[in-house]
Image (cartoon, rainbow, N blue to C red):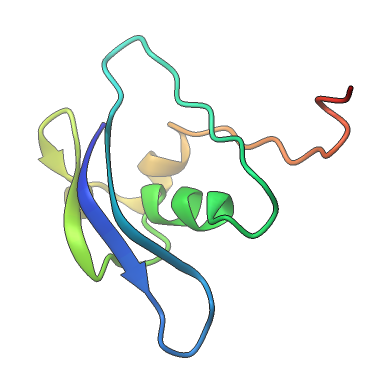
Length: 88
């Protein structure tokens, strides 16, 4: 996955991500951990193609995100939402 300068800004909501870039190479995993309201779920929505970027691009194996059916993108991701997963 290559995400370059991605932004999603919704003028009708506080949900936003601004100018985020990262690479995840083949065989690697991406773990997103942060405080509540920081955009973790929004990033997953973007990576799965549920919302459209307002800036930047995402490629999977060199192919633009828009080139994949949503059903195929969903097979690439797992999501754990558990506030008790890491305690202490």
